[in-house]
Image 1: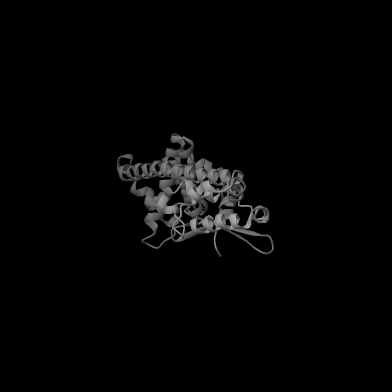
Image 2: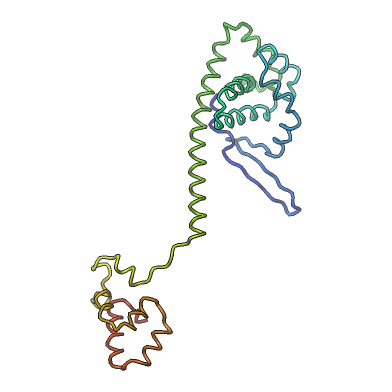
Length: 255
């Protein structure tokens, strides 16, 4: 009954060198091929659709006649996964119908497991157990419990998909509009005086404000070539005085 919480939790796609692709979904300790699952659904669509709307007696007859299909793992997975999909779409009535029919298959699987018998062998025993409508209360209890799990899982899955979509949107936005680099001078304005204090004990903002405008432009833009050009144009003594204070304040690395 609890297996809805573990459906399709891990999916692996392997591309081979010859161009072929193997697509598998892992559920707990079990795994099945997504491609084979898709083929199973396509090949047996008519039977799966008929079983979905079958009443109790017709369900018995179909499990006996088409046990080679309905008692397959793929059938069990089909009703679990489609019920979850329908609940996520808001189709509660169809979800409940799928859940009930899926529980017939799932509970036969559960009955067969401890006996280590093929589920198909246990079809008569399962339906004999619930021969009278009055005796089907335990079965319906399992259905109700399963439906609650589907509803809960659908809510969680929607949240997971919303979080994934938000992350992808954020990544896309960042790729389209990357953050602009911030100059050292701008960054230092966002720090406290203690945080920005230079190796020589000088405040880089205070030093920056005392620089000639052309030197301020060099440090704002980080343009090394412009700084070299200014060095050739300014009085060497004045330039050296300003440049040394820039080193002591951390505006420029002495290395």
